[in-house]
Image (cartoon, rainbow, N blue to C red; front, side, top):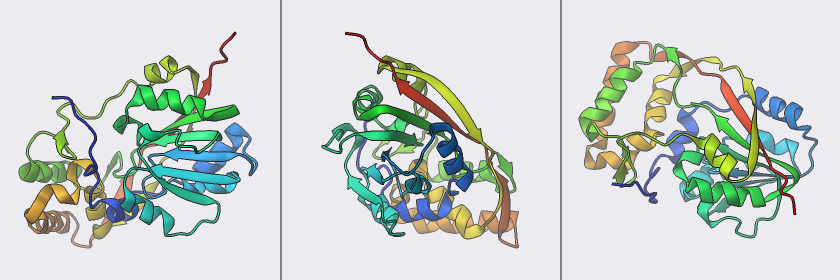
Length: 267
């Protein structure tokens, strides 16, 4: 059965996402600025922006536009009140939606949820002359290693939701799709040129770890129905057993950014 997007994908997750996922480091913005010569001009479009995770890039542009299909995510994004950011409640498949041209279009932990060939081709047409598309590879919900008992948490989720990965009203038996490089090239992009930012080592509270679990599409709060309280109680007991002090350390993976430039097509 082919998975299809539906509006419940992250239902109830927005606040958990904002609290439970590691913010992108300031070094990522600095690296973008150095790689692309950002100087406070031009416009940024962040597709699938969630709760505004990439707003650290906003100061490098005249305007930043965040687009997401989840209204709750956009409400979280708007909380800081950053002056040159605006938020658009639409699916990526509705682009270009009259939004104009952009110096940079970003996909950060979002591209795999989209009609990728369609959205990549549309994004290409929305780039201003000299514009670039950036695909951000990151895992901000969990570290590569650390004291959080992630394997035990995954087993607890399976106990409550079953062995097949859930996503919205559907399932993803094989996980989210890869192979984005071929899709970008087919859409008329050349590259990629990659840069990386090291991942930090952080200390997290028990509540932040709980939020990181509920931030996942595969463990979104609505999936548990009336057993959500039961699941959260078991999750908190598991975490207290792993760390009576209620603190955990995780080392996060590096953040890798692939920069794609439009191929110039001859007449």
